[in-house]
Length: 359
Ligand SMILES: [Zn+2]
Ligand SMILES: [Zn+2]
Image (tube, rainbow, N blue to C red; front, side, top):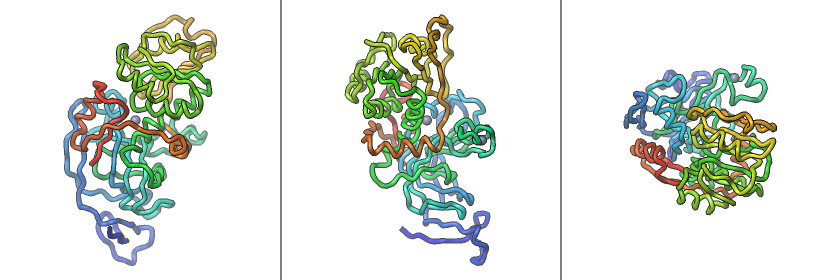
């Protein structure tokens, strides 16, 4: 692969003696990119050719190797999140290699493999950023939601929010770690260190988290749609102590439960399943309405919490640990042009583990 360094000013080649601040390193690439674009909320993604984009001074351009498909992508497409912006390229579990570097980027190299997660920019000055809670930033940008994401052959990202990934493992196997894994990890941290952990919904996030929890020597109790014996068997194959329907009572009281399925009815069910002082963590960005429930389900210091986004430290912590745990992701591969099929299959629960788009 040919590597060159050129000066670029507003996308045009500039004189070679321009100040160093405009220096941009690029690999020679095609002059255009392709993406699956959401042009209308509720509509299908459309295969689109776009002009190649140049990174700003603190940005990188990444040639996408794989991009996972997350339930949040469905919420974006369906218009279930506030402030939908179109056109937008969804996708926030991106693994790829840097093929252009902004002049002010430090610590990353051309050709290096990186992961780009949901959190793509924070303001750095709001009270939440100042308190090391950047996941709650007042002025954030999110990959694939308020900034173009990875359902594309290439994407632009803020270098400070990309994770260096090293070279072991395939792009496809790592992609689900970038959101399903990270949000699962944050949820687990917030759930506390109780030994008996319940997981409601056993998709991309839970199938990763079950492996983490088992590695931590916890017992995992998995709840699926009633009658979904195949997913229950899949959960047991990954080390779950017990797996049953969400209408069933686990064989013992849980210390904590994490709800991944976007179904509000599961909240009172999970509160019923946790012991006194136990925690129920809602891990999704969107959920159907929670039905009214008797106060006695919350009484005795049970706690109901939600998890929002991630911090970069979550990413550093989890991605450092993932190789030690030996997490194996179960993926179903789709070509990038098949993104609509991948979303439809996710909606219908037609695969186990995670869907991944490969350009
Ligand atoms: Zn996600
Ligand atoms: Zn902020």
